[in-house]
Image (cartoon, rainbow, N blue to C red; front, side):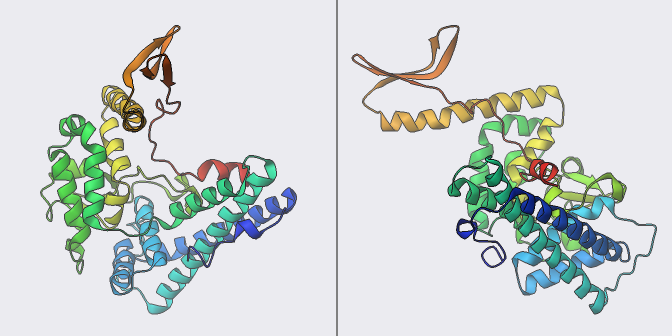
Length: 351
């Protein structure tokens, strides 16, 4: 889908801004209509019935559309209804209507990304084809999720990335970092045939409190409290587990590996300002240290020192040899990694 359903923007010439804005308004109308169709089906069945049916299809034939549909339905669980019709058996006709409606919603969302990239170019916000294509790629990755990769490799990457925060994580989670990652791995790799196979506490060593910290309550929010367009969904930090009464489920376990950093960070900094400040400080230090480490390898014949005083402040590093001096300042070091939707600001501006 990534190649076949997106525009080849490099080959598209200048399009009047008015035309692009019209396209975006029309796409927004189509997407809202698609969401309403999905809502009618979502409310007609017990949500677990739909999710189990999609999961069965995904196990039989993994596709980007099926993975995206599963992730989308899981994101709707906080807005589910448990007091209305809750049919457990999904008819073939209604299931086909659901998948067709979602596929169309996904195509319109991808086209929205294409048109938004063109709008940004027309406005001068994006300069150059490479930046425009990078925006398109980022938008597609948010809608479809990253390509599946090796589980062990993803676990090692998370272990490396989260290791500096080990103490903070241990202060919040009884499982500590190693226990969280072990549970994530189990939830991703375990076969799924029955509803209990998606349960978190009974299938891992996580305590109920640890699972609670990573969960959102099912049917706890009104549908109208949030937009359900694919382009306006919450970012990567949204809780990965859903709880129904006292049971916790991980229906979209793949997110535990893809968004693991943002998920664990959100749970830790959600414990209070002290945790938020401590995480930020470690993150900023790490952001500075990585590029400086690169320079130490490249400039191994020079002496260096961190936090070199300059004027009323300091620069991140000084490299010197004889009369030669090189000052290093990492301009983005004070930024923090945010689990955001990269399209949400553009959505507000472009419709």
